[in-house]
Image (cartoon, rainbow, N blue to C red; front, side):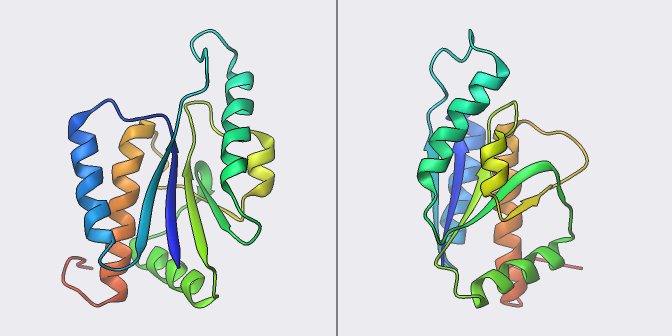
Length: 157
């Protein structure tokens, strides 16, 4: 199974970029994990939040194939412990899914069309984090999930 992390907007922090690159490198030992960075919408500083969500949504929807599993990282999504998330990932791998897309949207969330296309929503916390930090937190949790599945010592109960 291929895993794509699709994000809106580039990271402007070299520290976040370095951490993200480190976890992506580690993850590729277990699965083909690709980071896809979509450009910020044009004129984002002068357009409304709804217009920005619509533009981002159109760009995201073009990235999804018919058989892809689409998972939104969303504050209203399901929260789970790391061991539960690892089992969730294993279930998707066992299902024969060819591509699993985890999506981090822009600052205003997702358009209703993207929500309609999603197969699942996951929340990493009840707290709010920047979209750039979520990239690192999520890739770390995905890495942790694979270490749990492989009974490796990275994860400790």
